[in-house]
Image (cartoon, rainbow, N blue to C red; front, side, top):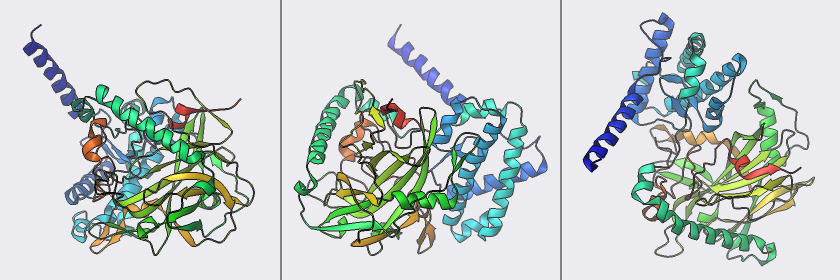
Length: 488
């Protein structure tokens, strides 16, 4: 077979795939055959999407479901597409995806200019929210009534990963990844050596600041229920009880303002106001060997990672630590893990309830477990020791929950970052690609063959690829069961 013929055949296959991707799924709303209310709501969503796209304020924390603007999915909800669902479970699945769409549209509307809001005919949030709620109910109900909607939707709900295949292809990934893997394993060993030191042996270069939540946390957590999909139903009061109870303390080696945590502000670029120490909280869920477990995410922001030298590839504007607590069904810590908001430096801290599974993949980073998590005792909090400049976690340990802090921090909802006050109204901290602008790192010019877009830049929830070698996302619904199992 000639080379030209093979190329033509390959191009033909690509063309067919691309063409089929443009064909609308059969269940997409047919406005010619639908009820008038469905037609009007379809027009409303089209008009809204046009205004949002025109102004570039798309929020990509959750992925849009193709052809169904009133549904959005994250990796956790998308994982149910592989499950057998009865009617009650399917209805719950739709409701949860619709809730993500309503949340996303509400924030996108807030970020529109006044002119943009006029183009969608709703300049007050109350009238917009009422229309959005009405069209959500109408559209979801109509979808439920459509034949084969469950089968069709399960084939379509999908969240794209944050790896770019063309970069890995161009960068000769099967070859180049080995060099990166050696460097990563070297960093793993260095990290384990740091964690192996006693707390007193860790170098202090500046002044130690102790940050702690303003709330000690309730000793008793109210019970919760589960929905048709076996997802925990946490009331607002229960969520707040959990976030306050397990909020970590920080002990930070501070040498300059860049080592202090603060509140995120948005002008022409994102900045961190260290006069107001804040942690942003976000609830998520994971699937773990048949159970669905709640996860408490705490996100801290620093003004920058300062340069350690003129050629420091990892330095840049804004830095951040994401600390996550995965709870058992009865509300006790099962595992802690952490990344920086670039998706870098993923570390796991399992409790003694877990065993690490064998890691036999050849071209894969594997799970870095630098330390087992200490068992919480009454009146104690997990405390993170943070290095100056790099903001690396160096150790986790228990400290007195009632001990006075140098800088008490308050807790805010992570969604605040998606619509920050701006001189021209509101603006997200992230762009339409889920990247925080102006947080680029020089490492992007070196790490691109691993396939991650703009490595080193701060990212929005849902866009944290956490392995340069291999394939891993922080919000992967099956992440923990990939590495850990409950002890017998």
